[in-house]
Amino acid sequence: NAQRRNANQEAADHFTVGLELLKHWSETAERVQQELTLLTVLGPVLSTTQGYGASEVERVYLRAQELVHQVEEPSREFLVLNGLWNAYEVQGKHQLAYEFGERFLSLAQRKHDAVLLVQAHYALAVTLFYLEDLSSALAHAEQGLTLYDQRKHSSHAFLYGQDTRVACLLFAGHIGILNEKCHRMAVRRR
Image 1 (cartoon, rainbow, N blue to C red):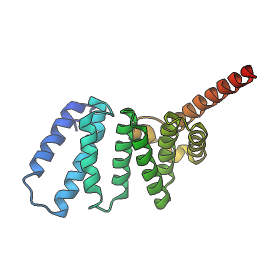
Image 2 (image 1 turned 90 degrees about the vertical axis):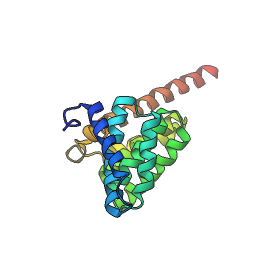
Image 3 (image 1 turned 180 degrees about the vertical axis):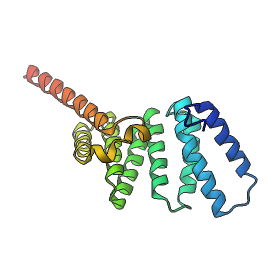
Image 4 (image 1 turned 60 degrees about the horizontal axis):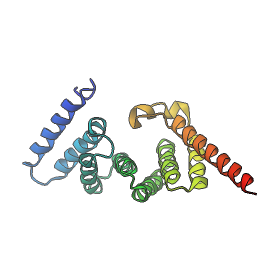
């Protein structure tokens, strides 16, 4: 209820208490499932209250990553990979963010899930932009735009905090502006 009301700190407190209570459970599949559930709802709440790159956010997603392989739920794995990608991107650890972006693109491709593919291409477009591989960044942004379907992806703004189409357009625009500036500078030097 607290999370639905955007009482994020209160929600984080409740999820943290839930995680503390789980420490008293025996190691069972149900316990792993419950902990993973709490971690994957706590991660976004902490991202809101502390920022995507906060060490606590990273810690939550790293623990979730340990557990996600014990539970066969690709949707949760994608949330974990996206959370870690966000954390490392914001921390400026672009090479590490790239590795997580590649992993969640691979997962989306294996699952043939267009919704996940759009998000994965966006993530790689952002990371490659900051790694200064503009042609690859543009290719991923364009791929995200090609796959985007308003009917399927309208919930992206709620799941990921932004509309992925708009975000892909933004980075494609940045790349276009940078390419134009580089071209002008090259022409002036001649």
